[in-house]
Image (tube, rainbow, N blue to C red; front, side):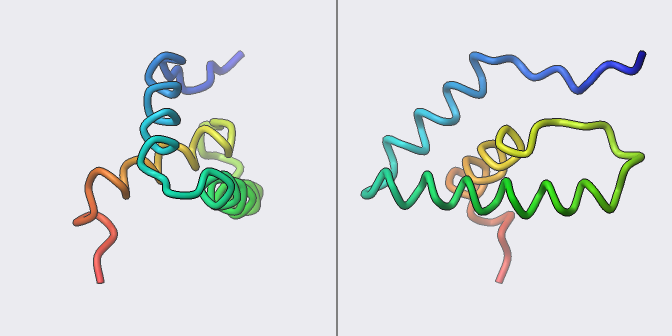
Length: 75
């Protein structure tokens, strides 16, 4: 049985906490994570050969990366 990408849960909690602490509006950041997760879920359905990671975890990782490293967003 293939193993999912193993992500340390403490790292996910740290990233989620940093997102919440940096946000001026907690509701808005929650909605952003939900929208990103929904988009990722639909993208993952198109690409079934990619190792699966829960869309919410992916969204938290990507949003925290965008927050800490704005140069990865581009113009």
